[in-house]
Image 1 (cartoon, chains in turn orange, brown):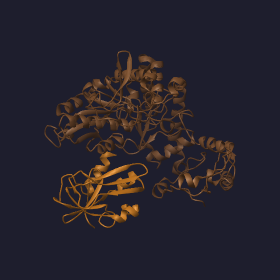
Image 2: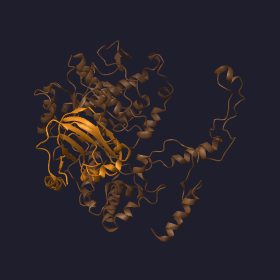
Image 3: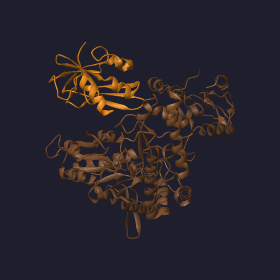
Image 4: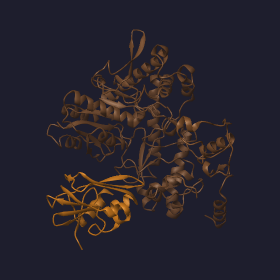
Length: 124
Length: 510
């Protein structure tokens, strides 16, 4: 199984070489509830780490999805705009929202599965 | 639900057309009524339409044809589905839904105020201008910010006016490189929207562990793009913030901002906690909007219109919108762009929502300075009372005292699979309009309750009892009971996800 990384803002990241597939964690999905709208960036957009690359909206709230690493948006998941339930699929399959071509492939802020689980316990 | 009740419900659903049930009126759309060829007025036979308009002679365009009593009943029955502050307690946090005193309405209906027109020569409406001048003075005094422009027509319009004033100041001063506006993550959603509309970039300030801004986090955001903060245009902060907490470090934060060359915009939505006691100018504010339809008791929401005057420092007053009312000798006149060239110009036609100015000044003068101080005092006391009384049944994320609203979360109820949404629906079942839910966004499952000074202790106690009952039900009755709520309302639990995903925005004959 592919190794997934997580951010403190609950993005879920799958790194395939220098391409980062970005989705949101199960925790974020549960906190938001069913999505009713996904706003995607445009392909070609250059983003810094922390810039927003998408907005996911549920009946409760709208939340930005931030770039976990700096890079360029190279692909957007247009199928997501038609079928919001895709968000629940694994990030490295159909659950990604955007793909970034990243300039650096690592960051101290990215957590592995175990560290993220620990982080979720801390913030609860 | 008992089998008997269920049967009754199902039977009723099938029966549901016109008519009523326990004086809960069911009402079809005007288009669905089986009336025809009735009319409230006798119109003369028309002729010559084709000649005058170039359009064909009048044909049937399918408008409903109902008599005057039918139309009247239709709308009055529909209006009974509404819920307003005149029906009962309206605990929306961050929205200050309070009583609209009827004295305001009486004053607004005086012929000298209600039968005038904005195109009249100002010499014939001196009383109206004097009223606006007085209101400007009161708002300037209460905020400590003497430059007052009454024209913005809503809170968000006031925000826009405030940020445009800041942008104009930077433009005139040649600081066009200042593009960043700092906004805490607890802000009202309109704040970042306004900043982006004005062409600024938003930089987030994370909330500290006690629900307030920290100087450290602020500094990090302030100097993130430039070591001296030379890219900062300003910041937008609501104080007290949307967690209902006073920003304790606001003076230090405002000083740092000013040293970096930025202006401090304060979102005045929560001014009800401060009015008559704290002048925002004293904690460093350069410009803020005031919601007359919140703090100053003019009608709110659909019953508005809203009114969002801005108040600013003498420095920024040079840039704020026109018109404003000034006094020359014994005469009141409008100051326009010709009189104040540095102004950003006009934001809307004429002078703003004049009827709201009458109501707001009526409210201010009937309370006086001491009465306004009691307003904020009572509002803060009520919120703290609710927080203290509910602190065992609900999770209180940030320790009090709070200001005019108190923040709770569903953390305790979540273990029974009962969430904030379920609690809101249960409140409807118990006859209350729900509080603000899932806002602010800094925590999950938030419930923001603002009783205002309007509610009596009895009313607040009844609400507290209801909230306690709901907490007990969460433990004892379980999720299935909650997920079926509300039961007694004309419509039961609606599928909000489906409504948002597949909105039906146009009526179609079935």
